[in-house]
Image (cartoon, rainbow over all chains, first blue to last red; front, side, top):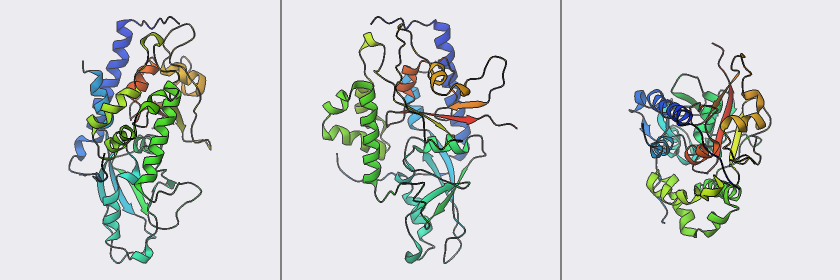
Length: 48
Length: 275
């Protein structure tokens, strides 16, 4: 099967920008004001 | 602009600030203070709440303690869904921290699976990875891995080791360039107002004509109501990892970058807030 996966650079830039910006906003919203909270426990048991 | 690798890190290190409160019907010897944690979005509730359990057990008698379970506003929280999915589905658009109630009795057998140990979580996680690889590569990648490679994926998640996990997980993300993507995209679409737990069907990343399928193409086929008609107000939010990707985003890219460690792309469709 031959694939035509070409999209314009402008289209690609738009959805990528949206994702990067929203992830950055998510970090501000969900983490920045709460960094004093305890991290959940990481159970270091078991061997590789 | 940031690199695509940064997206993988952002997804992995996503945390939800959470306030755990003991259910008021539990019998305690003294008042139980709430407990505050940053919960990893990609992990599982019962895997990261040992400290919560220890905290509340300090004020309870052993005979009053049965299996711990969690509830949000009357909804029992399924530990076998990733934490981020539970939050996006039930608590998006609410004020943080996320307020979860902790129970030690009246386990809701009809709603929740029991989770007696971490090995149950491991079995569930590995079974999801195997199912995803069956869809992506007819199980060829996961079957070619050794037992220690499977363990590396699990230990990476359990111990929050991004590099350890991705050193192995990248193999599960490979595909032949000429095919333009996986065989099928492992996805699950969750909705709040349904008895059905989620929508999961076969869907290819590339159309028969060879063009890349987008998130919008997937929703059009699986959940058309999630896409607003022209001029119509948006009735639903389509949320993945707490964000709303554009419907033009290619599904193959989403699968490679916004899948959970279980290799599924978990998509929550929630009603748009009215206020």
